[in-house]
Length: 49
Image (tube, rainbow, N blue to C red; front, side, top):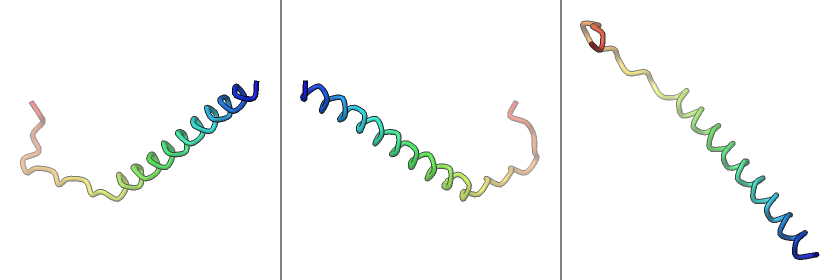
């Protein structure tokens, strides 16, 4: 019984750590996107077709 409790707690902690890491990655990638400059538009301005 004690082994099952420990296993369940390890699973919950693993999910918690995974979501924390994903949240940090999402925040850092959002900051990186905001800090990048938009590419200069090409002369002529014709469409992609």
